[in-house]
Length: 182
Image (cartoon, one colour):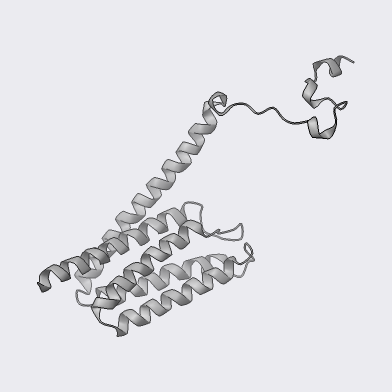
């Protein structure tokens, strides 16, 4: 009897099921720890993107110093390697529905970008390779790794930052080439 008196009325078994609902705490009254946790995750994702972008820029600088006349094909080859990490990180384990198929399609598309970068002129291959890097960043953002993946949780954000860093450096190269052609 005392348990029935302590139970809130809206959870009472006497009410029909449609009236039994949970009273939600307004958002402004929710505990602060939950919002700090989500803010920390968001800031962690931003930090991973920033670190990835710095590594992308450093990789491009290394490519330009080591292979000054082959920046675009080498960058496209690295794009293929970046796209291969998702299927290799799964190692035959089943993932979310359609996930492995998307990964292999993305790998095939980046291989096509590599072939185009090797065979087409710089006026086409530089923007195409930069677009491939941006497309891979979008893929990183929307792709669900799934529980079967061996990749850590921070990897998609860092990879997206790396992709955007590489794309930015290719756009910078295209801009400098255009300015120097004038």
